[in-house]
Length: 149
Image (cartoon, rainbow, N blue to C red; front, side, top):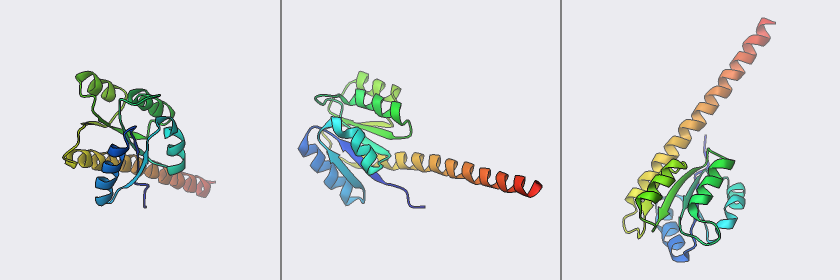
């Protein structure tokens, strides 16, 4: 089954959005970039993205608050923090609130980000596989019950 591999990238810096989209696009990822963090929820609905890359330090809504909001509304959406806010507090809060990884700017080597993305999509795939297995088991049980009647 072909699964959605769209990545939503939220950052208030247009140059970061361009660089990340270009580098990840070269690696075959479909990136939807948004500069306004208040548009994140709408973009998640319209794109069906299951992975979000979030900046931390943004106006209007900071990335850690946005991370909490995303996880509250759909815990299955995975988030990778991409931030210049390099501190132990940022990393620990990101992990505590459900981020998959925290990658720091300036980003000169995209390998750690790509490795985080690949690991996250593998996790998403395992969840989808479990759900598909559950649905198959329910179908089989329903068929057995119908035959028994």
